[in-house]
Image 1 (cartoon, helix red, strand yellow):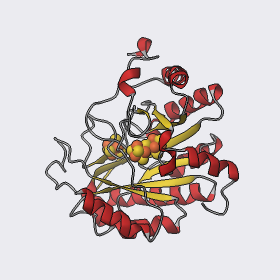
Image 2 (cartoon, rainbow, N blue to C red; image 1 turned 90 degrees about the vertical axis):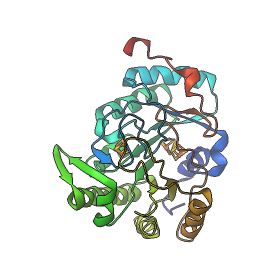
Image 3 (tube, protein in one colour; image 1 turned 45 degrees about the vertical axis):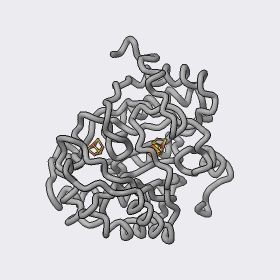
Image 4 (cartoon, rainbow, N blue to C red; image 1 turned 180 degrees about the vertical axis):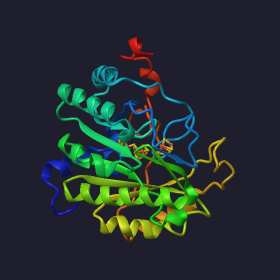
Amino acid sequence: YPEWASEELKKKTEEHPCYTADGHKNARMHIPVAPKCNIQCNYCNRLYDCVNESRPGVTSGILTPEAAAKKYSIVKEKIENLKVVGIAGPGDALANFEETKKSIELIKEKDPDVIICLSTNGLMLPDYAEEIIALGINHVTVTLNSIDPKIGAKIYEFVNYKGKILRGEEGARVLQENQLKGIEYLTKNGVLCKINIVLVKGVNDHHIPEVVKKVRELGAFMTNIMPLIPAAGTVFENMPLVSKKELNELRNKCSITMKQMYHCQQCRADAIGQLTQDRSLEFRGTGEEKFE
Ligand code: CLF
Ligand code: SF4
């Protein structure tokens, strides 16, 4: 843990199923309140949940903040080891900041002890980092695939920065500058940042150790190198699959630099339960009747 981490933060983090392998017995609930996205990753076809933090497969229904809070109460009654509420799409948590913020406020009113976890592509972090901290959020995941605009240009089709469409290296540069600035600000202000990195073989594989070094310098807590899932209909649909062996070799190599996550399940934006046991179907429709 960083020197500044309080005992309370350490305790919360030990309970977080993603931040420690030991937390796996605890459950997390993702609330799909963030449909819009402000970038276009070449591995995402928008029909599915945000691939940065989830696997393509089935799109989750969107909840209003009120419906999400209602659903939280219902789920909390049934799953007593529910410790974390995460906002991980299906688009970007910060591209829907009003909904994200409202949901957090409503859920915290019901349960002040719940750990709130955000996942974002980081484009809007410089604008919202202060508010994230004011909301009492201690765990933020940023998906950061490259710190070289030449490589970033191969991963992102465009970046929509405050209404302006930026392509190629220009877009990748703005995105990475904001991501790095945001990570630094958060880590200096009491937030444990986890960095998700999508491993795209032939594009950023050799570059990843450099990304890990950079985020360590900025004070990030751990990195989670995730394999690309080549989804149909995306620019990367024919990209090669990465074997578990290759993935773990890279994670092992990077573990010399900083703490690595080995147990990521590439969850859906509406996942509920322990990481290995998604119970979202059981709760489908719960609390959202009026809104669908
Ligand atoms: Fe959700 Fe992500 Fe928070 Fe975990 S998931 S927002 S940090 S509570 Fe966890 Fe799922 Fe992997 Fe994400 S296993 S995809 S790392
Ligand atoms: Fe898709 Fe997520 Fe990338 Fe947005 S940030 S384009 S939702 S993978």
